Image (cartoon, chains in turn brown, red):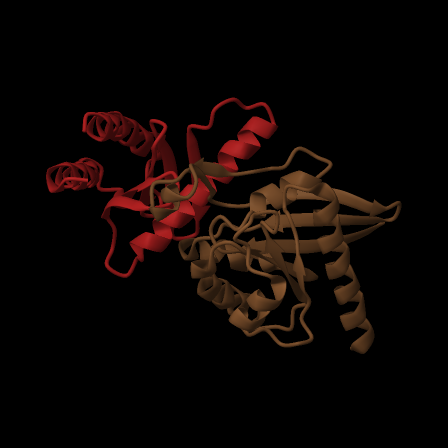
Length: 177
Length: 126
């Protein structure tokens, strides 16, 4: 049995908890608490430690999904959760361009110290005012080699597609090395 | 938060430390990790300490629930140079205290519980 650790990150209210809840086959371990900062303008509750979910992709392959808090003050959790990860999903709220700069900072945080395979999933594509993945790519200025794909985090099939894309990216990177 | 209320909370934290000299520092944070008041040493970054307190308490509450231990009341951390204790303050906040090495745990818990009770009133009465 092979276990692959993936971390799901992104700015506040990008949809990280929803993403993991959509696909996990176990009860997701969540740590949501009432938001009392500016987060409360967007949503009632926010993750303060982590989410944990699990999904078997094949008989011999299990993904462990760790979701991070979004706020910078929890960056110690970003460090702790990224221990031993094989790949990273960066979720973006496609309808809130004001979060793109913070998203770029989060990518920098996770990739600055070691080479980490990652993909960018542009969430909330079902909403009318969503930016296209192509426009988000330009805005975040990510290298051409990085995959930027559309997604709706509440849709299990789409979440699965994102995770498989990341899995392929991890395998491609492993072959190159 | 009005100044009066915050001053009252800080005052309560200092009185806790005076009542029990084993307690070297203390802080009160909201459950989503924002500092409400602190009496911490200068080198401690209160924003980080309060975020860590909230994360620890949340994860501890989750494992207590997972293993059928009911509602979580306290988290106890022992380091070689002293202890750290976290205590839930009602349903809105967490009290974190640091002690010197060889502190008397029973006394610390006694004073913390008393302080937590008073803090609940201070938080909720405003």
